Length: 624
Image 1 (cartoon, rainbow, N blue to C red):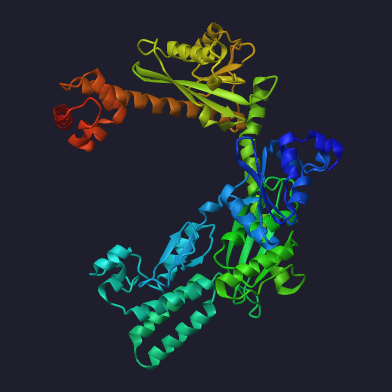
Image 2 (tube, one colour):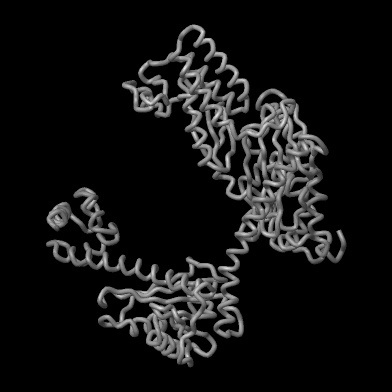
């Protein structure tokens, strides 16, 4: 390590670097808050970790951004590099560090679970794979498509869908039996041996041995027909039709090609997707696509290698061959690790990772890449569309209003009341054209009497700027780059007056009123409204802000009005004073909730008695 670089490293980190072991293993970087921000593996922990601090100017941008955030280094020593790789996958899945390449939302991918060890097995869609002896298939990226496939398969394999408890209670059979979607083990309509044989065939189908199953059903159909068991032959015929319906979209690649997963990467400026094609018995039987994050500054070989590690750390099946469209980092170590995992699953350690150069395998890799690139292209187009409606709209609005800089923080205000009763105000915030809901604020208007929207707007704007400029409340900082009020010149004038009273300078914070009907913009010092084109992104941003402010205000007003009605009714109940009323309002959100709670729950509210609870229920049940 160079002397200058070492001198710049925090002394605490320097000491940790001195104590690093030279064995293989995993390292974890934590920030000052204790959060794991990166997980890596190394053949020599000492050499690998020290390299991050050797030459800061030569680091990739993502790594250069990460290193200053490292506050603590943790290491886990392993016996081999293969063990380190397995541990790295588990740690990334557990901590989901923000600087690692990772599958987006991989915790939500579903699996199919079949427990052939159960007395009466069934198939379930689950979210986690456990080491419980059951067979798992997946993960799947499209749960809707999985459910559609299961509906079709159930015509061929009528498994039970009832719970174990319902099964134990016995018959009579449910509707599924009568529509030929269950064999009714609950009522003894099928023996255990036949039922298990059917479920084993279902597992064979899910494993990809579909041609074998179709041949078996065809043989049964012909045998039944020859023996003049025509009803049974018709059942087999219908099952074959359903099975072919499921498999008809499968692309035949090569009958000589063994089972394989074909993996390719598609990469754009703002999106990276990995595509997997599942080849079984020479056919592409399924596909899945995975969105990747944390790829900035990583090469394609690093990203694809990271995907292979993370995907097969949770995959229920590992085929004997992986075909990639390009080489990956750590290929030999990954191959050894997957071979060991495959040996644990099915007793066979035969596994190869290859980048095909010619023939059907190369065409498959190209097909996977085309699919990944198509997904990337669609996401890039969606990103451009979103940017046009957010950041692009902000820039367009700046141009129309003649502002010196883009209004990155836009605040929009609205007032809601019912004939002046329970008036409230809302403040919604858009940052870079996107709604920032954690920054929304709501106001219970206090000074306005009667239906006076101008006075209500004046109060809300005054309180907003006073909280920022006088009280220095961080919840109201920073100040907006553009202020919008729902209303015309009257509401705008009230807002400008309130800003001055609170100490804000309307000359430095541009403000506009949005006319309710024609959606014209009124600005200070302009007699004529500004009319934005109906198809402009700037107008759409103004409309989104106004509609969101209106929604937020109306929602709060309805809550206040409901609480007021509840308070009014409670005041009529004998024995309910201010303290009991306050406790009841804190415990129950509505009259309906109080009524459904019953006497016992009402009596448990602090300050309440059983007699008062009974009196309250009598009033609630007598109301129309």
